[in-house]
Each structure stands twice: as C-alpha cells, then as structure tokens.
Image (cartoon, rainbow, N blue to C red):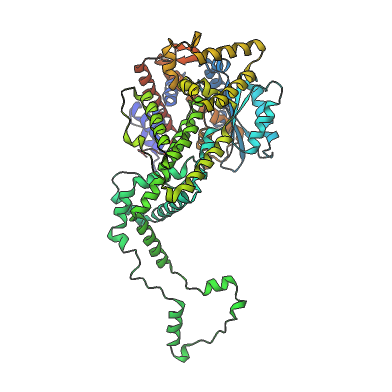
Length: 625
C-alpha cells in the first residue's frame, strides 16, 4: 500500500514542499492560523538560511535545552525592548492570583505590569501548601526580591481574606514598606455582578433564561430548528464558570435571539411536541384498568402498610410517575410560554440593562490598558446610576453629563452621543424600591473591598478629574488623605517628600510644570492615565490554552516556560510593531506619548488588528477548519 510519501516523488521541489507542509498541518491537527503568524515566517526564513548539513532539533532538545534557551532569548528581547527601563522609570505593579490547571493542581501566578505592558513572571505549584496569608506573602516576597524591592510600587490581589492579609504582611517586610496594596478591580466588579444576580428581580429571569437555553441546546431537533429560523449565525451561550459577567453575556445573547426563538417555537414541528394527544395514566386509572380484568388475571393482593409507616420515598414512589414523553412535552410547553411572553422578555432585558455600567467598569479595568485613575469616579457613578434607574432626576442628569463628556472626549467635541448610550432603564418604585436600595448597599460594600489610599490618590492625580476634584467638597478630604498617605509611602527621604508635596500644590493650582498653557498634557489626560495593570484572568486563559487536556502530561515547570514564552513574545512583538511605526519616540511629562489625532487613530487601528491577530493564533479552530 502506498503512503502519502510516495506521492512526493515525481513532483517538483516546490510542489513537494507544499504537500509536506500541508500534511504536517493535516496529520498533527495544527490550526491553519499558524500560517499567518510572524513566528511561522521567521521559522521558514531561518530554515531556508541554515547550512546544507543542518538537522532539525530532536524531541528531547525542543522540550529541554532549546526551551530553556528560548526563555533566555525572550528575556533579552524584553530587556532590549525597554521593559527594564520602564520598570526603573515608572515602577512595577505586581499581580498575583490563584488557579487550578487541567490536573487540578493549585497554582499561584505572578505578573509584572508597567506602561510598556504586562510581563509574565512565574507560576508556583501550591499543591503542598495551605494558601494562608503567610504562604502567599512568602511567595510574593521572593518575586519582589527578584524584581527589586525599589522597583515594585504596588501589589494587586483579589479580595479574599488571605490575599488581603498577604498584602499587609508584605508591607511589614524590610524594604517593602512603600508597596501599595491594591484589590483587583475586575474581581471586585465581578463579585458585585454576582451579588446583584442573586437579588429577586434578577435571579428569576436568570434561572428562566438558563432553562430556555438548556432545553434548546440539549436537543438536536431544537438546535436545528433554531438555526433554520436564525437571521444570523449566533448560537445561544451557556454561562461559563470561570468567566467574568457570565450571566450578562448569556442574557444579552438570548435577547439578540428573541425573534429567532419566537419563530422557532411557532413552527409546526415544535407545536407537535406540546402536550395534547399525550395522556398520562394516573395511579387511579391504572387501578381501574386492573380491577376490570378477570379474577384469574389478578396475580394476588398486596396489602400496603399504614400511611404512618410509609417513608417519604415510598410516598413519592406511590405518586403518579411522569413519562419521559410527557416530561419532554411539559418542558417544551414551558419554554414556548416563556419565549412568547413579552412581559418575560422585559424582565430579561432589564437585568443586563441595569448591570450595563458595571459591565462597562469591568471591561474598563480588565484589559491590558492604563486606567487606575478612572476607577474611583466610575464607582461613584455606579451609585448615581442606580439612583437614576429609580427615577432620581438629578442622578439622570449626572449620568447624561458623564456619558456625554466621555463620548466626546473619545470621538471629538462635535460628536453626537447615540440615544442608546443615554438610555436609562426604570426600576419601578412599586416593585423594585427595596431592590434598588439593596443594589446600592452592594455597590457600597464592594467598593469598600476594593478602595484604598492609592486609588483615591491616583484619582486626584488624573488631570481628567482636576476640576471635579476641586468642586466636590466631600471627595476632597478623601483624596487629600489618599495623596498624603501615598506621597509619604513612596518618598524615600524628607527632601523627596517635600518636593513631591510642592509638585502636588503646583498641580492643584495649574502652575509651573502644570501650567494651563501645557494644553497637550491636559488634552491627553483622558487616554493616558498614570499607571496600569492587566487582569491575571487573561494569563490563566493563556495557561489553559497551552496546558490543556491533550497535553496534561506537561510538568508545571515546562508549562510555565511555555506560557512565559508565549505571553512575553506577544508583548515583544506588539512593542516592536508600535516602534516600527515611529509612534513611541516623542513624549511629554511622565512618559505620556505625544501624537497627533491622526497618529492616535492609526495606533488604535493597528493595536486592534494586532490583538485580533494574536487572538486568531490562540484559537484552536478557525473558520477554515
């Protein structure tokens, strides 16, 4: 029998090479998007330039010495790309989070963020330890000493008690007194969504939405009917266990498929599944049928024990049993009634509408972008939002002003804000007053979890809110205390502290280096905050992409090395693409990038295309598969 190798002979060299590449992808299940990656082009160029006697590396070489060498190469590339310079100039925000890999091994990951980007540092195997505050502090302290205590300015964790305790213990260590503890704002916002999702007005529609989605996606015939009735190729989504805002994403997709679902449940095939011709025989009917038979057909009489001796299980067993066909018909009827009920759709739409600003906050703090100075005011606006939904006209006006200023700040002063962005859902006072008050309590509680002096201080340092900070009297004391505490914490000497305080006064008065004539600095303030972080959840997604079920024999050390190379090389390539367009040379105070509006638009488009390209490479299956 011929193998595919035999077909290479008699072909031209180019055709044989094409076939060899194709069979590599077909036999090994490699995604076609790999061919679009820079790594593929680099590999082919280096292979073509290799000497005639070159032999490809062996299995043990790739998984051993070559992997270690690649790690060192990536570290050098990051150093040449300016990451170490940014670390020394701006400081590092160290991040930590816990996770379990595909083998249920508990891991603790660390990342270092600067305005240059977020660098993957290490993943620690925590399976032999209790994740106490002391243990988490000891692991974080090792990373701090590796990066240099003088370079680490903040430590970000989730809001768990052991994580917050580790921050407090870390500050008590020698050389770490200046490190500011920060709660992961994405995690806090997601907890707020979970709190609201448990309230009565939200829990019912969420459960019913899950019921509809589960029934439709659990049967082949329902999926086929829905696809036939669909106007666009979007599927209903199951809620994910480890994803932020999971029920909001699920319900938004359900609302998008409303018309398709209504068409589906009105088809003849669905109507034939509804109860009608199905007759459920009760126990009494079965007994009547048995008694009508002849005496010879009866096999004997069973005497039942008194009711007081029957167990609960026996009572349930004696109840009429629902046949499988009747159960399916009942479920089809329930889904049909929900989908055709317009009042139900209003309740379903209300949940994501009310939670929309929380989701926007979550999306704002989750990406690998600067934004710490904007967090305080956005949490404040969440309280105004709930009041606006309750009918407070002052809160509605404040929300409109916030949305308008934000939209025009991004799209230009002459831009017209779409009406959908100004839409405010109504929580009827007769039905939702207690729920609105409860939502406000949840917002205040979660904000207390995530608030600290550092967040109050960077709000005061953000030029976008310079005027608001001076106008809002209640905020001034909180911001002033936060600024004072942070300046004292970060200053290494009395002279440095006095200089920082003097600059803070200049900033408040817009004088000297902060004069109002420096219009470019103030104009760029909206898009260039002082510091950044990246959610660790993104790095766990990368870890899950590499260490998946089909590669479950990877050791923790080798999987960590692969994640480090994958993640950090994306950062290196992204930095190189920006530098190639000459968009990172000019700067204004604090390293803010100074570009024209046209250059800013080009950078944004280029960054979007780059992120989509990286995402395509990470995708296991693509549209061509």
